[in-house]
Length: 456
Image (cartoon, rainbow, N blue to C red; front, side, top):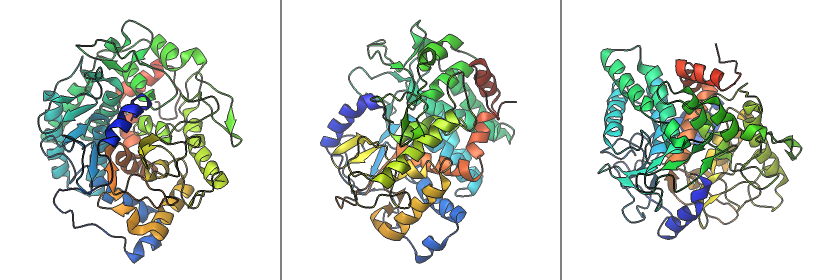
């Protein structure tokens, strides 16, 4: 969820985003925590978490589209006409999760292929805007659900999160059976149809939104650093509608001004976060672009992104240990991790300088490749100390506060998806390997001036 939409999200929250229950089949089949959960090996524990969280995108998917619902509330209370709203970015995370599920045996290959084929057909039929998808759609009708008055057309960032997954699907299936090759081609055609260059509006920067009725009226340039590196990588890699290298250097990297020498808790931040001076943003900035794009050793002319994402997580851990507000359950071996999620009053972009005593499990769990020891310690803390207060039908609930005794049973797609994918990247590198091996990504990263041990 982008930060400029927090006000809108908070207004939505005020209309009914409180706690929850899913009305879909199996709602009483919750996998409660068993006594042996805490004695599992780290690998088995990650598998348990992945398998349960995966169900958000499998059983919990909106049935007509096969895509991920924006949210699932276990109490069944939703904002008006919201229950069947699907999210494009969250669906991208879920599609990568489907690949994980197929590979791990959470579903059969045939089940996964059928679902992916259905999704590709739906994505090809719904309205697009110079090839880009909107932020939200009504899954039951395929109609756009405007995110705000002027945000009723293409959303390039959400599109990028989806396109990342389309490349993963293509790479996973391209050498398989005729049916698998057909799905791979559909995914390939969809990602190649995005007109990234249109979204520059003739300038050396990508713009987040375009609408046939409001043109570039949102006027939101995408500049580093936040969650939006991957739109530039995809735009530079596109074989059909590419951007020039100058768009990356002047737009995302701000001609080098993206770099920062500041530290927090004596840990280098590395980049100028789109936050107040000296602050780091919510931890999803270290996840969303890096579900497919492997940050390990990834450097451009200005920044080492591998160091940036690891240090971002370490700063969260250091803050948890310092715990300046003396909130309950904080620590590197307890609760840590601040990101955009549900909050006690609606929705908020939590970070160490915006701490409401709310911890979002996705923050630490999706950081497993960066901080495996502390991420696993957090998972065991949740299982050992909080149990069914935080664990439900689709894995760990979106957020909680021990201080306020606040344990809402609700989920968001954009928070559940990275858990499945990033844990898999730590365990096997599956999604990183598929995305990074794509010929266009190899060429695009080189074109934009990147170095990576994954470039051949």
